[in-house]
Image (cartoon, one colour):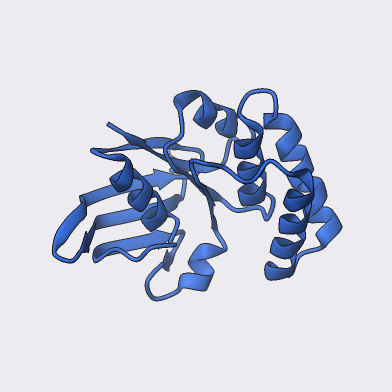
Length: 180
């Protein structure tokens, strides 16, 4: 008998929908991303792609539906869910190396992590990406991945940028939103 080893589910979204003032900004969507898997989620507009990415990263709560990061329900256990997922906005992070260093220190404090260790991790990630993606975006990826998250959500990322992130860590679960 052959036993299949399935990768654990890193992110599961069930019928997530987002409305504002009775207007559906994000129609219901469901997606499951396993560890080491790269999924692209197409949305009909840039606004929908941005909101869907923030729903997946447990930043915005869906009006309807559920989001699980690892085994944690993002609505019921937001701190635990947010510790497992990193978010990269489409506009990246400011281009200033000084602001980047301050932000890494701030995030190290929030994560209760060693500042020097997190700075080394962020610098290594940035260096690995700096030649293949815009520097502001490489900094945003470094900030998202430096704490050692298992899942990353990329907002309106190109296929080339997504592939660059995927090449960093093969076990990383990646959800990228795009505008259809």
